[in-house]
Length: 147
Image (tube, rainbow, N blue to C red; front, side, top):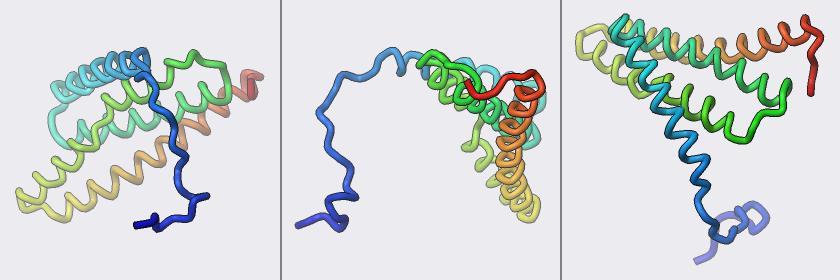
């Protein structure tokens, strides 16, 4: 049976290569760090508000990080896996966000759950944009532009 996609739209098959162990180690170390930071935030402020704040702050940091390492500096190849995927991926927690919404529904607060779901997504998208634009503005004010 043939593919439903024309040949030019199918991904090219690449030969198998060795796994990038250094990248996997960077992601794992960063993920452990970010998860510990998130757990600390939960201990300080348990509940949906903690999850909301962690996700918004993490998304703001992702916006800043992505601007800095793509437009401002030439970063080591492990910076993005360690900080972006690892630390900030481990710090932000959209699985807990969904679990918090389910608990709100089960507690009979469906309207609050819906507001929490929509508000978190919109706030996180806004936070990424603010992070990128804020970092770009600061870089411009300091006379730093694209590499």
